[in-house]
Image 1: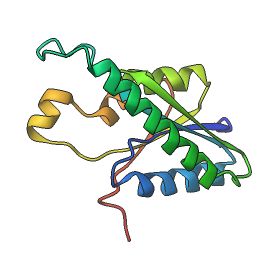
Image 2: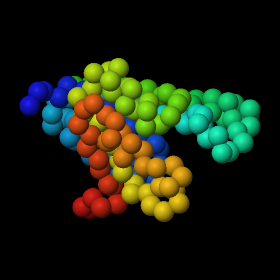
Image 3: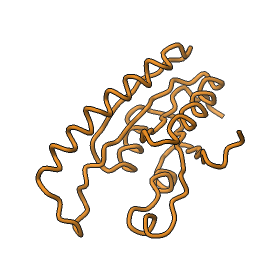
Length: 150
């Protein structure tokens, strides 16, 4: 197996983010890999069934600004990692941007949280982790924070 030197860790800043981040950082650190935190602000394009108001661009911009502050804080919290850490915020289709970012950065792995969405949410939105798993050109490790041992 080739050495894994970069790991993309998508974060959504929900209540499970800390668990996913701690797990991913632990794995990446053991592999000697740089951690690339990524947050994608959904741009809502492609939702033709919804009437998207023009003010969504202002909301999206505000969301990006807040996410950049959170990413900066996350990077600061893990700045002592021996192989390094960085963070990025992108606007776009969440699953597509995660995969595109991994390709652009030549990442050898993606570690992503999986919430286990079901029912109507899965039907309407799908699972981001599943979409990434289906389209990523590198190994994808999913972490289900609710099923993790305490």
